[in-house]
Amino acid sequence: MDYLRDPDEIYRLSFLRIEVEADLSRFDEGERAVAIRLIHATAMPAIADDLIFSNGAVAAGRAALAGGAPLICDANMVRHGIIARYLPAGNEVLCNLGAPEVVPLAKTLGTTRTAAALETLKPHMKGAIIVIGNAPTALYHLLEGLDLGWPEPALILGF
Image (cartoon, rainbow, N blue to C red; front, side, top):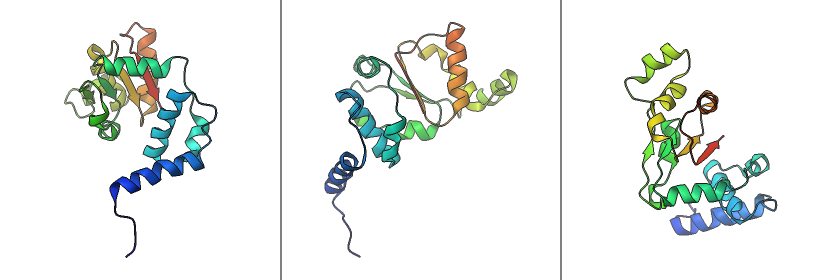
């Protein structure tokens, strides 16, 4: 079979294809870099049309990462999608979805396991980066918790 086998060339061409297929013109330099990574992760150039960045979000995320902030994920799938070698300070990546206390807590709270898992990570939230990529109930639970005074993260990535 004839196909490209060189990983460096595959990588290069993947990012070149993103540049050609996605409209990235509305993003500043930092947002553009994030958008490109998200497109690469999803293989969906059209996702660029749906991305919204708060003012200062990219700078806040970079500063948090550089300062060693943990990343808190809603699901193991998301946690495993984070490439550790790109984390500048050996940042911890946390997901408590499989923790034994999560199922009973979810029943007590009357919510999903992902929301309960996020609740168990409250002690790690101050200044953290929260990554919600799979479970909208986790994002809603986080927002409700922030309204109730939970520790404030540096950045929330919600998809």
